[in-house]
Length: 150
Image (cartoon, rainbow, N blue to C red; front, side):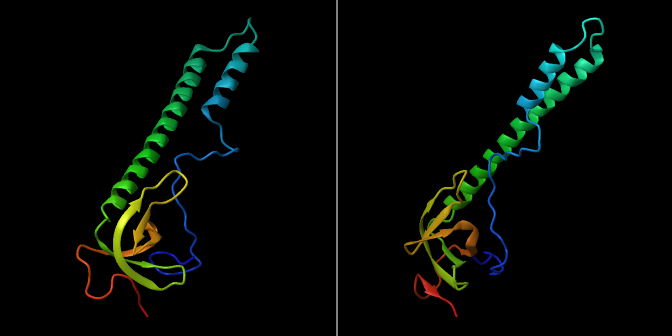
């Protein structure tokens, strides 16, 4: 599939996702389990230093807040993509199709993005990924509403 900007078929297309699960990183649940296990198995005659306990609690709070920030950032990105897609309705666009040809047409509607898929513009009856659009104009150009350029 060609890249929407350069038409290069060797460039992979990627989409933002609201959450990334990686097995090699600790989440807040893992951190909390470790903290509870440490407290459970500590020697009662040698309790953990209070400054260490405060540092661990602060670290736990930071992990939790970073997860909240990542979720808000992903939500913001999805809302921005939806607003951008909605602004395309009624505009003339040019996009690169799967054969690498430039095609122009009027956007009649859009299908909004979800966590799993990119927003789609409906151009002359064809579903086009918003990321494949290379040009946008406010008024339709002269000629047909959907044509392949040479």
